[in-house]
Length: 360
Image (cartoon, rainbow, N blue to C red; front, side):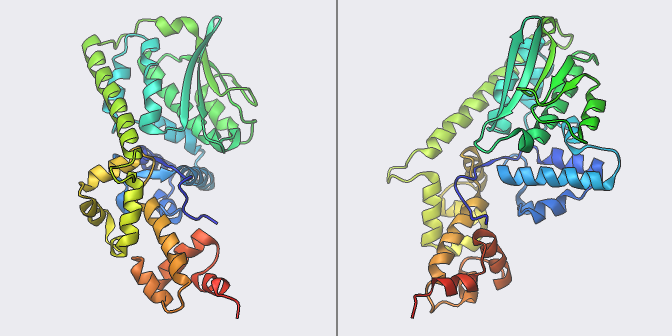
């Protein structure tokens, strides 16, 4: 049962092009995977697309499994991490590549999560002669097992960018993972070419502490400072916008409340798309998408919740046919409505109507 729920908070899908690129390299059809997992492929622009965390986990698992099935000797999380690029976060990349030291470049680890994945957290710590870059995922359902592929992908990206900063030199001397060793660990060990330990207290990449302050050849103070100012401003603007959108308007309703009320009061908007909804709210469509993304919401997620609520209400009215309900909810046909309702509730509209009917 996967009824739409506010608890399933979407995250920015700014990395969608990286997923597509990695899938192509692994010989798998990610467009089909997206569609089968219910992702709206007609609205996947990296600057505005969002994805549910649980959906991203399913997509990752399927990509891992299908890459295994293709049997090219590749491991999807490593390919994803290796092909990662800051295509829509160019100021972050400029900041990193113009840093005078690794310690300075590591400041970006504070900015990447709010721009990329708010559940992700980086920590840089120093222990004696060693330093470590650790990654964790902060949500109630996070475990070493269901976040391991994302951790491996992040480590592959860190490996790529630190080698670039050091002119091809390997930074990390050892790696620790919280998950136990399994058949996929061989691919990680072959890629990182460093000692790897499993079932450890923290997932981290460890290196010589002295390297943190080693001068980097790519240091460019003016570009570096300009990029830092722009990134800090962008992170602050996003946080401010999130607070603004989460606050009630003059009538006491948040942005999400306003959208849900508009859709419920004017059901015709359910089938007219984002443009019509934005016009109803008197905002530009791209502005609405961005504001929803900053709140961890999406048009499709809100649409699903409102459709589910209205469908249950209308199915209890025997004067409304299921075909009429399907049409009023903006579905192309009854079959599409039945599939969606079954996904939300675990039962068909007809069965729900029978079960909800008052006893004779």
